[in-house]
Image 1 (cartoon, rainbow, N blue to C red):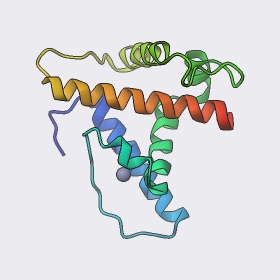
Image 2: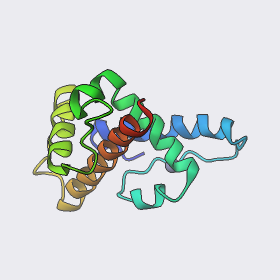
Image 3: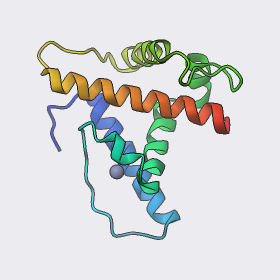
Length: 135
Ligand SMILES: [Zn+2]
């Protein structure tokens, strides 16, 4: 594990791995290796059911339903793709409030872009779960 990563990234990777553990039980696959990732390979996650399941656990842990509803609206008015600026602004405000997260000048541009990609991925998935499944 790269301990230089922001604690939010470490927590997200941890909950993603918890999601793999749970998904492994659902899919009856127990041979997965722990693989904490901090890059922006989110497009790869969208083509694998197990990665999506792991990310779902992560986003549900990071944004409990009541918090997600306050941030992103109720089922009828979720701001999924209609207003990405508002979605990301609210997600960053939430991260700042719960963890003190800031885009740090001592992070490289790539690191900050990876964090931004993660914030967008997580916020869009959380809002989609709220809009499509009311969870
Ligand atoms: Zn994974």
